[in-house]
Image 1 (cartoon, rainbow, N blue to C red):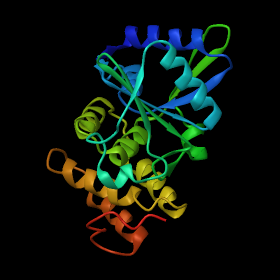
Image 2 (image 1 turned 90 degrees about the vertical axis):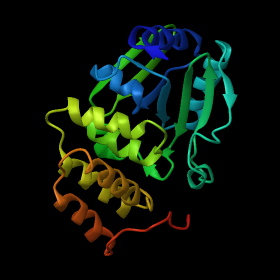
Image 3 (image 1 turned 30 degrees about the horizontal axis):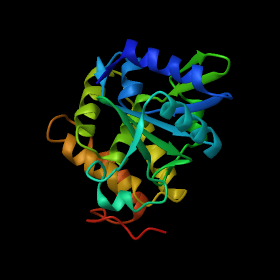
Image 4 (image 1 turned 45 degrees about the horizontal axis):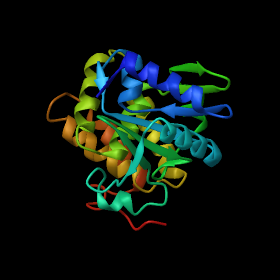
Amino acid sequence: MVNIQEQTNLFQLIANNITKNIKCYAFGGTAMMYYGYKDETKDIDILFVDENERSEFISAIQKIGYREISAIKIYVPEKLRDKYKPLMFVLGESRFDVFVKKIFKTVLSEKIVEDKYAMHEYRGKFTFTVNVLKTEHIVMLKSVTERQKDLDDIKLILKKDKHFNWQYLIDEAIWQYQHGDSWVIYDLEKTIKELQKYIFIEQKYLQQLYDAVKTEPILKSYPTKS
């Protein structure tokens, strides 16, 4: 597990080992620590837009001792067959899940980029920039990754964020579906139905997902990958 100070030290160490400026987007437990919602995290989930920048990052973390591991048993089999599955690296009790271009089929939309929560820069000779996503986007992406404890993190976000905007989340999920993400609505529907066992969520949000795909209920299994 890594706490916020250890994460800061780790990111600074990465900045000291890169040979060019790189930028990523944080959306998992890492992002939640920036909000103050978690004291520590095991999974450091980050997305790079550029493949070369991801390669530079991987080179830097390998220099400090991280080694690549298999994603089997971490993600569901359907997700592991996807072209955009993450590369994973571990050192001690911390793990990087490193995506590039997409989180499986989910893209980094203009809205996600524009509405980011914060930006943190770690400077060595070059700069490692970490952009932190909004809570609504974190919930959407944790629905997509659907690993052990992702649902617990989502429940924690909803408990902490008193201004969580369900309509904003639904709009983004529908946009993703309309732009080629054949999984996101199915994943989000599962998450909402599970959350309804613990908290009140208006049925109108599920109905908007159903209307977007013109079927109710949504698929019982993952659609064929395109």
